[in-house]
Length: 279
Image (cartoon, rainbow, N blue to C red):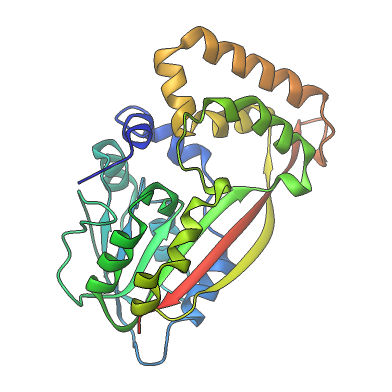
C-alpha cells in the first residue's frame, strides 16, 4: 500500500483532533445532489465505500442528512492513517447502519468485487497521485454495474476573499511538492483511456457557501494542513514565524464582517463535486 509521505506524516497520530475540529462539514445541498445523482438502476438501501475517510467528517454529515439516513445499508470506510481511523471510530456513530473503518488505500481497498453501490472520496482524491489509473480500476472493481464514484472537496474560496489568497501565499512554499487539489494534477484521471473504458463522462458542479469564523479558527484551519502539521513538528521556529505572519496579515486585510465587535467574519468556501457512473 503506497501512501504519500507528506500525507502519512502530516495526518499521523496526534494531528487528527485539530483536523476534525478545523475542517468544515459538507453542505446539505451537496449531499442532496449526490443522492439525486444515483442512477435508478441502483435502489436503496445502498452499500457505500468511503475511501480516504479521514476522521469521519463526511460520514457524519451523510448519516445525519434526511435524504440519506434511511437510504444506507452499510458504510465501509477505508483510511490509511491509524490516527485518523482512531478519530473516526471515536466520532462516528449510527443507528441502524453498519459502519466500519479499516486500513486501505485508493488502489487497495480490501473490499470484495461488486460490493458497493457508491464509492465516495471526500477531500482526499488528490492524494491518489500519481496512481490515478490504479484508483479508477479499484473503484470499478468494487462497484456494482451502474454504480457511481463521488469525488468531493471543500476548499477555501480565494476568489471571494483576498485574505484567503494572501494567506495561501504565506504557506504555499511549505507544500513540499505534495499534490494539492489546487494544482489540478488529479484531473488527468478523466483524460485517461483506462478511465474512459470503465466510466461514463463525469459530471462536475460547484457550490459556493460561507461559514462564520474568527482569526483563531482560520489559523487552526491552517494548522490542519498536512505540510503545516509537519512544519509544526519539525521546524518549530519557522512554524511560529508563519503563524505570526498569518495573524498579522489577517489583522490588516479587509474581511466581510458578521459581528465585528465579536471578531466574527465570513469564511467563503467552494465545494467541487464530480460524479462518474460505471459503464
